[in-house]
Image (cartoon, rainbow, N blue to C red; front, side, top):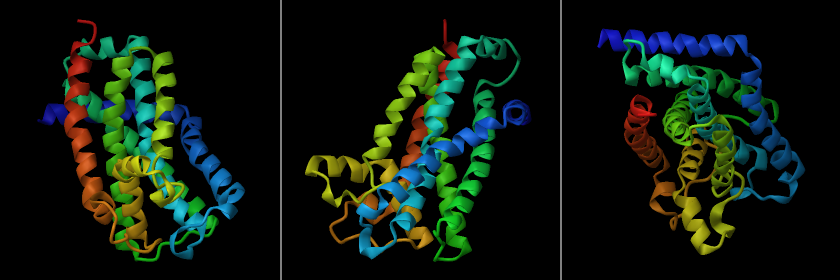
Length: 262
């Protein structure tokens, strides 16, 4: 156990040193949410009505926080495929280290960097008028929920990146995360969507997490009586989705890491 923890810590430092030498990567992680904030919050926001007459940017910000977490799929996909392409994975597998701890260290490092990005995005939210209305305890719970979803997204990306096998393929496949974010309640309520699409959006883990964060931050009115279970109970639903993703993709990623090319 101590050896596995030591291995994970060493791989965690490897990734953090990479970010230290490439600070622009943190800025890039903020780029997409900031672009969405400008486009939807200011360009299109005047034409979009938030539930309960709420200011649209206050409705949008928790969803953007969740998108930062979900973007971990793309980042980890490309990173895992890049390590395969450059032979780093093969070199790591020749070392007497725990296979699971190798990926765990990278996931924890990503979580640390994402926490910094999330704090910066919270500052941006305050700058544009978004506020926390339910106290620091519930706000911290919301941020913790976002980081948990990020952790689950990273494991998903690890497996998909190694499945792609090449950095170029992973980079192109990562774009598919974008429509998943669009078919959710991040930008607009799902009530106006066609029936079948609304069902998909309501059960989307991104919608669950966005609704949970809005509830914990105190940004919107409660769920309607006709809301499906994930939106009526968004916090348990988000915890369940996150646990399911980790339980499914963490073992698959470790197995793929250990057996790739054999």
